[in-house]
Image (tube, rainbow, N blue to C red):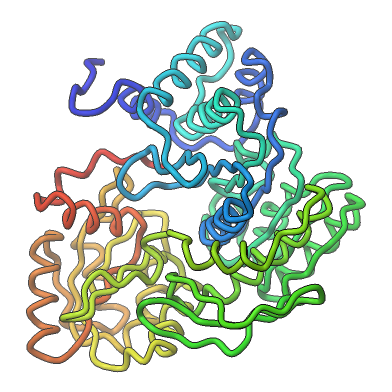
Length: 446
């Protein structure tokens, strides 16, 4: 296959691996890592799984650790604009040349495997590259987010300092199970013997699974509900809150992440950081919490990108996300009529998501997203109509954004763009480059 010269070589080679799809399992990656000298064993990981909130929780933990003066890596997915965002060191996305070296190293290791070994998928390759990057840069402390599930996720090759389970909801049922208990069991598969686990707030059916798994693994359980995020003030530009735990009380903290649902993620992050203190042999100062929360950057989650009219981006894509988004809009007092621009991947439950937002949607445009897994705009428009949004119509992203803005200006409304992080990336790329969003269709399938 000829290399697309518009992208770095490592990214072109990664893109070729999309043909292998998403394959749960650890055998191939473990074989590759063994030939690399097991770089995953050289990191002390905070390993995070969950349906919703794991990326924001990872961002909060990373920001506070760095504010405390600790060198820290972060591995998350997907990215919004550039693959490099997935692998960060000390808050900065790693450079192309470092990723190219890591890619070369992993590919060389893979070539030495027995011929009957299944080839590494996109996500397995990316995960191995991350471990190589952290080793080459001397990064020991890493915040590591699962891709899908937990038990069979490629990241589950690590023995973490602490495991974290954020809110569990319905998503990826074809892979993870059809009940909250089944999905939670897959997420809780990251719990390791003797390693502490933090559990965030979630439906009781899912919550019951995590303590049972922790007991089976003789893992100390830390409940994030013991962290109180109090006196919260919501605004489009972020949150102001007080933080109370059995060991600290900090008033008037701020964060630029604005969604009301971030309260839950803040509690999970704080519980994790306090669980880490004795493991790291340090006491994280209050000033680090204050600085870390104030400086955290995690775009695409209830992100305001325009105020005239209000335009909000949110990458939520399942029913729980839609409920959280509706609550966030109410908390931020966005009570006017809404113009909805939405697109989804094919494996998402569009109907459940759209039904929740339909009552406050006055106009809607259906678009495609920058992923090979995109649902067609005609199918999204049909789902909008079934959900009760009778005036929904298909459009290109550029057409939809222009029409939604014009409608919001004329009707004193707001624009809400949601349904996929790929769609959020498309919008951010369009704003950054001022070119047709169709040129940003080269992002991956994972």
